[in-house]
Amino acid sequence: QVQLVESGGGVVQPGGSLRLSCAASGSGFSTNAMGWYRQAPGKQRELVATISRGGSTSYTDSVKGRFTISRDNAKNAVYLQMNSLKREDTAVYYCTAGIVTAATQTYIAWGQGTQVTVSS
Image (cartoon, rainbow, N blue to C red):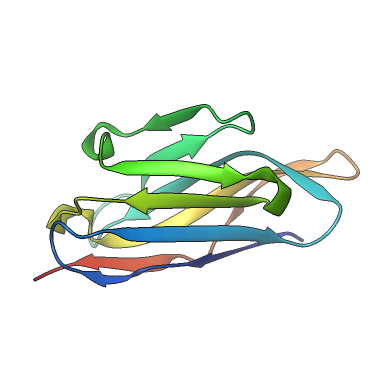
């Protein structure tokens, strides 16, 4: 089973920056679309950004112009550069990836989540 391991969360002041990383570990697989979700306390999980294997990206409106998603296909990794952070960006961030196994089975893998707190 493929595992997604996230890193890079933490506490940052408003206006600051953080870079989240997520790498898929295992063998005999490839990744299709990858993305980041977030869930703030008392709110539903929301899609933040996605990136296709070819590099096409999409963002939720609230992060456009501030967040940048990127990936490294050779490492099966996805990144989220977050700039000009706001208090409302505080949430647990989860990475996700479409997995294709050597047996051509497909499923969605999720990371364990990493906390991002924007506070002065």
